[in-house]
Length: 200
Image (cartoon, rainbow, N blue to C red; front, top):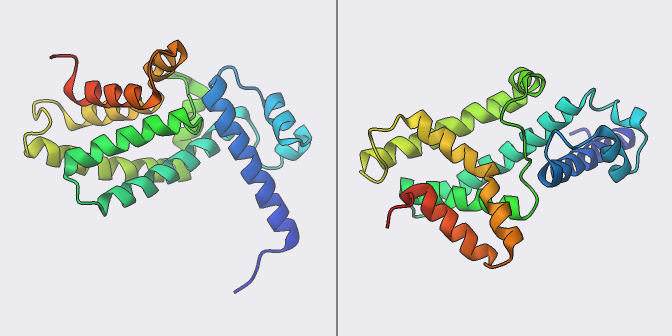
């Protein structure tokens, strides 16, 4: 087994630091407001060093999203080992996504951005992980619909996209900024309304 050379270790550590910085800045500011200059200042490297790893702001965001999908896959694997039914797993995953937001670990991407969308669609690591995650969640959704726990008249892909949208739900930040409720209360209410709506 060959150990990575020192230079490779340094390059990997720098790349990890860049992606961690991008994830945090995307969570704080969103894609449109984040700049490459902020990333290099946060990491403490020259812009030329950053461009050895990533050629654009879009590639930076894609790397952060690959990391998010990897963490999400790990969480789905953990949940699959627990004694939960399909609905319980979906609810637990949505709760986890809200907790990731609270921890500043969930990048905020624009709903529509052609250049970023093109980069994400062309990123094999991103697409492979997204498809694998969608397959797992799709299985949980159809199982929950089959058990009568979710509305079976809704297309499963609509439910899937609704759940993905919870990862960047702006209600969490607005409610938290108000300061009237605890994080736990807010997350509980958001999970409740995600799956049960607003009806009493």
